[in-house]
Length: 231
Image 1: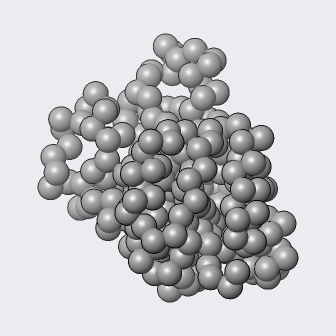
Image 2: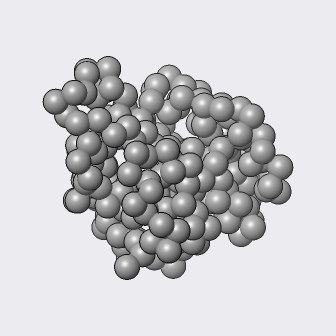
C-alpha cells in the first residue's frame, strides 16, 4: 500500500496515455479513467500496474465512483492528472445551451468533481498533487473557441484557489496551459491544417513536465499557470 498511486483522466489516448506511461515508468500504479474502455485497455497494456476505470468525468457521481474504486483497490491516491477535454469549434452566436454546458462540464466542472472526490484521501495522507491540463486558448483563443477558452481560463483560476486551500494540508495544484500538441483532438479541429508538426509538442514531452509536477521537481509552481508551447 506504500507504492504511489496516480489517477489519470483522458487516459485512453494522447497526453493522458503518455502521462500514464511516464508515471508508470517512475513507479506509480495508475488508475486509468475515460469513457472508452477499449482505449483504456490499450493504455493498460503499455504500463506495469493499472486499474481500468471507465467513467464520464463530466458526471460527479461517476467521478466519485471512479475514485472509490481506486481507493478500494490500492488504499491511497497521491496524484491526479486531469487530461480529459472537449474542444468543439463553434462560434458563440451559434452555440446552443447543451453544447455550452458540455464544454464547461468536461473542461471545468470535472476538475472540481475530481478535486473534491480525492481531497479527503489526500488530507488523510498528509498531501497529494493535482495536475490540471489547461490551454493557451485560456488567454488567446481561436475564433470559435470561446466556450473552450472560457472554461480553461476558469480552470486556471480554480487551480490557484485549490492550491491556496490545499497548502495547509500538503496538497499542491499545478496547471499546465498547453499550446498545440500532436493529438487526435488537435487533428480533428477544422484549422488543424494550419498547424504543421514542426509547431506542435509531442504528448511524451508534455508527460515529462507532468511528471516533474507530480514528483515535486516543480513544487514551487503550485498555484501558477505554466505555459508550454513551441515557439
